[in-house]
Length: 332
Image (tube, rainbow, N blue to C red; front, side, top):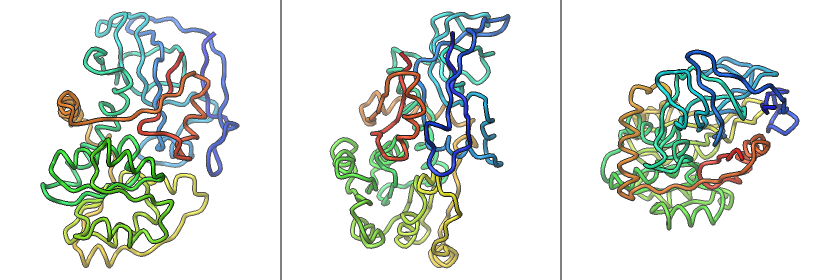
């Protein structure tokens, strides 16, 4: 039999295991033009929480009682498609199933000799591309500027900060433990770090870490940390609204400071960022990230949980900050 994970309930607040269900389905067969794929690594990401709501967004919501999906690295077990052969490794948006069929649309061949397979879901995947294109397209980061990154120990944030250092900028990261702050400084070369869980006044903490102000803010969390960052922005600063994990499980719409006056007074640019809007730029982004990786200018961390049955819990653990860098599940 072939295991699949479906969305059983739409979560209220933080997701729980009862919102997922394992089902057994028959192993499929590859018909003409199709591929038979074996799932090897599954990416679990905060944005998937938004797809569990039945509401219109930049990507369709998950349907109840149907398999969830995310970025996956898979092996081609059988091919009846001229573009792929047995033994190829591919990445793409695929279902949470052990074995599945694909027509090859949206799949990218990946080279296990150039980088480890999990890297194609992290630093060389959508997370790395997100960091790169967010800074290129919206941040427009310039040499000597000060970059502030929230969720800095996560997969996107850690890459964004390192790109800032590659571009000769000063970089401050915000994370949730002292150990993560140490990692930002020692492994990822950040100039400074702020443990928001030990900080009562984020506005003052950012001002202390960024005495000359913030030129570019790469926001992965939203909420009160965004409010504090906005108060420290320099004139003509740019804010990249990439994620809002602090709000994803909120059952009511929170309120906060009004931003109109600070946007006007400081001539700020603030833009929501969805990486899929820049799909035509993915090849160039992957090429540059790969070059930096080869030159040892980029480092990355992964939290790899083993077992197909661990996928739901690994996803839930993201909201408790249990991951270092990219959260992945290796399917045994």
